[in-house]
Length: 394
Image (tube, rainbow, N blue to C red; front, side):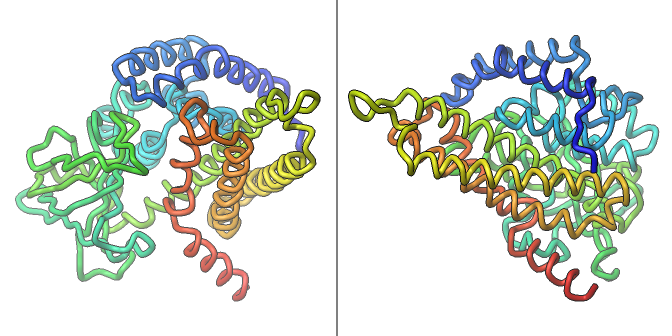
């Protein structure tokens, strides 16, 4: 592997980093204090600037309106953007829109691309993805029981979903539902596009997560489909291919998750570094001079560096060998990096003392929000089992 970052990519990363420091970090105070009425217009202004800079939607091909070059570059960009909870949204590559855009690009019909993909990539609309259910095990999606029945050219959808990120304000959702309960377990489900204005689609609530319900894009909803009817041609891909599409959506997306987590860890270490170098503990010493603090910083630096190598190696492997031959590596980096970032954020919070518990820095937000990293897109336990089984039978 060649770890050299070419000049064009490095210049792009430098530009992004500078933009974050000058334009994005100052907006985090509005985000952390839930001042949505001021925050959302400011975010839209930033998004316009990013489009002018030619950095918009780095996850999507140029022909769709994005600026994608290759997976390695996208991973490095995701690492920088991950330093702020606003980064990916401002650059138009936020989940769940990123995954939905990729699904529509790969499997959508021409009509679906024109109606939904084009405005989605342009940032003119938002979307959400409805898969997880409150009453079935997310670790085994073959147990999904939300259903869609085809009657007279219309899908009749019924069921309840939750942790449907960014449902509030979304124009459409892609919902995973059972379309043939008698089929083999991995051919039972399909993905269907549902405009949120459709009768029978209802947001029950924005779920309070660690004390915060959020708003708009920054929220996770519980939603219900109550005889929600959409045309037959709103299905994405073929009937019964829901699980295959889910792997296309979730698999490579885990590279982006992991790199974002590394960016979070790096941001937290830098906040900690600044604090430790300024915090006086006596007339002649600052906290950074304490050996225990130095040891904790060293542990965090080492863990992040090791995880970063694993993730970049996996991204390289996907580009060279394809996702199917690399999926075991994806499972390894998913649970490993999720745990690394949790430890790094925890050490950083601890180093700030009482300040770390407040929302005066972004660390407390990362501490609350990223605990879920060990659960969503496959819980740690599931990825460990998958990786171990694959290794033992190979």
